[in-house]
Picture 1: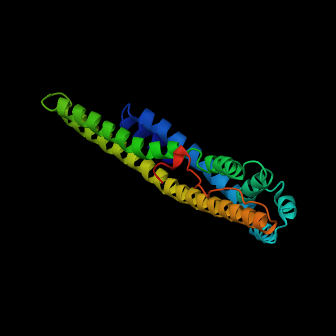
Picture 2 (picture 1 turned 120 degrees about the vertical axis):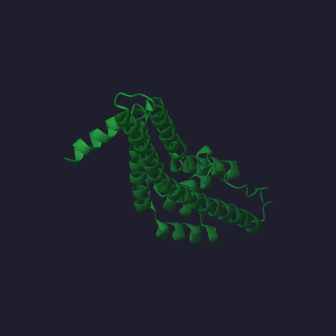
Picture 3 (picture 1 turned 90 degrees about the vertical axis):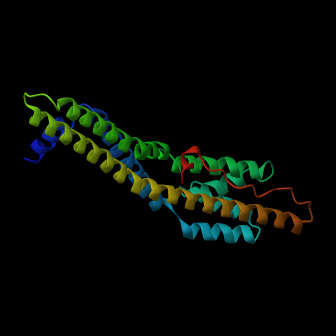
Amino acid sequence: MFANVVIEWFKAGGPIMWPILITAIVAVCVIGERTIWWIIQSARRDPETLEKVLACMEAGDFNEASRLSANSKDPVLRMIWHGLNHVHYSLQGALQVAAGVELRRAGRFLTVMDTLVTLAPLLGLLGTVSGLMGTFTAIGDTELAVQKVTGGIGEALIATMCGLAIAIVSLIPYNYYSSKTVKLQFELETAATNLEVMVNAAKQRNGTEPSSLGTAPVTSPPEMARA
């Protein structure tokens, strides 16, 4: 019964319902993929090991910190491990590369979701204009004028409703996952800064010249343009 109603509404929405349908399918796939990805990432976070690694680095035991962070699935620990393995070469560059990889994974498909939020209402508006054009064209015809007018209005309303529904459904997870990506970026920047400070402090304690390591901020991926 419900399927029949949906099919009837789809037909009544006019030809613009086909691109709206494609947009809806893409939205469901992207939101589903991002939801599963973030659930998996949340399960991989390891704050206890992160505390141990930070404690080891504060004590100057970088070998133990590297051992603890090796093969970790936590993005912050992966970045720390990458930096520790390049501490004698280019620590800052290694941290930026590792953090950029983690942020790109976290921001995947955010541009697509942003596009869906903008595109869906525009498609609905296009359907509205198309339906109203059919309505005004039917006005003045003596044959089946009422049916044509009501059909055009129905097409306009259905297209608008579907476009807005897709935009609303896409907007909420887009903002949510954008905020989670920003939070991950802050955690990566904080860990990178701590690592650089501790490495420089260890070099000073050992009587060597500290390297001129800056604390350049981790850059966001293109997907975070609207976050």
